[in-house]
Image (cartoon, rainbow, N blue to C red; front, side, top):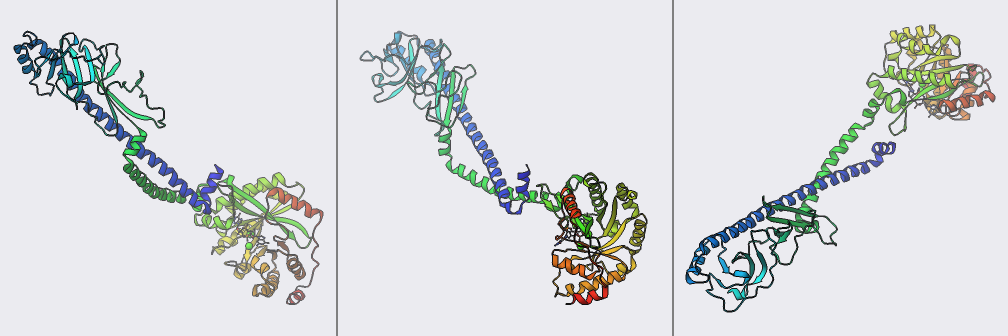
Length: 546
Ligand code: C2E
Ligand code: CA
Ligand code: CA
């Protein structure tokens, strides 16, 4: 699941997500189209079976009626002129069955067209005799030469002393792409195929088509019987034949499915992207369990020891990637969720620090707070859990000036916080809104110099402004934290100014999880850095200009 979400979220895998959508939708649409196509084939098989059954049943009924009529109306002496004319009268029927033969004991003697057959005609054994009382015998594919139709074959049905010839064409296949079978029921219930000689009814006893052994795909079929069940018709075809027969339609269906899948996959992908857009998924998952706190040590220049840490927040994304605050803080600020963030961070840091820090080791803990949340009524209940009176943890608020703020309100809050022992620093001093005006007007403990100063090259303007900025803060009677210290050179240089109270930066440690932080702390406590020797401020500024 995590891997799947990772793929969905990753920008480089979007083509895979889209392709996945396309393939999935294409398969679904192609299957739906195939299902519809097969259904249509089945509908056509059913319609063809119904049409053929109607035709075959009508013939069967006509033959039955004809035998009744022959027995009723052809009563003169056998094969006499009166007998023949009675037979001809019966033969004048609209159903096309007008060839009838007088054949007592199965031996043709005379017919409506032939007063008397010259020779004794041997019809050979009939195809079937086991019909109930409706028929006595059936000859399929019977040569009719001797019966007066040279070169013709036909189906002969016998009942009592008479036989009739069913004209060809009654069982013509209804569909070019399906095999048709017409059957009559035998007295034992089996079906006897009556459209093609010597060919069995193509279904086994359970009604499943035999199908040839080399047929890999299943067969499609439909069987329909007359209500009394005496005549049955079936239509069967194979998928292979259907594929062959409807090739153009299949291509058409595939192309339409592909086009529809391309369009729908675009829509679905767009919706997915919208759903999993960073802001949307962050807002859905901004919960305490996804908040990660990291701790970056702060070094006290006077002692060379780590005296505290800054708590820096991260958010765990759905794919477990760690997201840095620059990505989600703008959303938090835009949506007015800063207090919730501060609460999550304080709660988590409190739980982790109390659980992991050696109890006897005091620590200053710096939290980042936006000016809009700088309100004692909001913050004190949150910080109170640190048992401020015990002195184990000293709390410092770094005021992150990312926006213009209500000076009066912030000033009041700083006073109230400091009254209960919570330190207040101006963060990112020298950048954005964090100005000299704030330094002069707010009773903060100190400032955290923006890291653009400490990271600037010596020769750059910012680099050259660094000593002056430090001197100015010192002159205002405030403490200074310099962040962004990455090299020994820079630390040495800051130490030489004698104007820096605390430093923080990758040189000492990156922001790390609590367990690693406690490790770094322990290692440092064993081997502290060299403390800064007090230097006269004025002299240092000159020295730094080099
Ligand atoms: P910040 O308060 O200026 O935090 C210091 C940032 O500098 C951190 O970035 C830290 O990782 C980075 N940093 C520290 N030492 C060095 C270094 O030697 N070199 C360089 N290049 N960078 C260094 P991070 O953690 O990405 O935090 C960015 C900002 O997000 C913070 O800037 C702070 O304004 C804000 N932030 C972090 N945690 C919180 C929080 O819990 N609440 C609020 N409101 N804002 C927070
Ligand atoms: Ca900060
Ligand atoms: Ca900063």
